[in-house]
Amino acid sequence: MTRKFVVGGNWKMNGDQGQAKQIIETLKSAQLDPNVEVVIGVPAIHLFLAKELAAGKLGIAAQNCWKVAKGAFTGEISPAMLKDAGIEWVILGHSERRTIFKESDELVAEKVSHALDEGLKVIACIGETLEEREAGKTEEVVFRQTKALVAAIGSRWSQVVLAYEPVWAIGTGKTASPQQAQDVHASLRNWLSSNASPDVAESVRIQYGGSVTATNAKELAACPDIDGFLVGGASLKPEFVDIVNANL
Image (cartoon, rainbow, N blue to C red; front, side, top):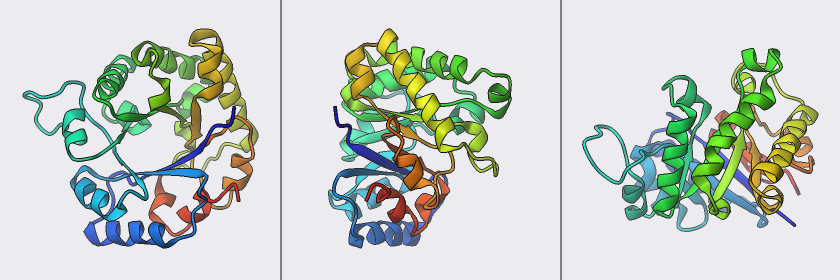
């Protein structure tokens, strides 16, 4: 099965309206690989602007949402609100949500389930810390996080992209080699074959999200079990075009 390459740009808490316009116009005017699906995750305050500017040429994602449709949850956004705004994607379970905001596997799974119920497509993030990697717990952690997602997703895997993010390789100066990344992706796909289904393991797209740059993107993209990238800081720079085009 050929899995369509998907590259996500996670702006995190960065960018004013002028920068948002500049980045999106740069992407729209660039010669992007037509075989790559591009989704940019912008701060909530820019979602309407980004959706208008993208004009259907780029996917737009929220960076988070809550687990119910409405209620007394000050500061939160529901999947229903995102759908009403014309937003099709949401990023959930990002390492920063898990580590800084203490989101548990169970909470992430609840949010994923509700987002799917509301018809959103989800980039669901998993990954281990440096302490966990050095303790030899990479697979234990990644499989545990994914196990919670399997039950939440059910039969809706066509709406989901998994993003493997080694937390220790994000903004730390440490980097995972392409082989290290490939090894985890292959192990995860094998685990999914046994714990979801062989069809899910074969079809689900798994992004790599550990400090991807224009320098390492081509080598990573050549790995058979890496189906795209979730890009942080580099998604704010012109080199994001080169990352999108890593397969050319």
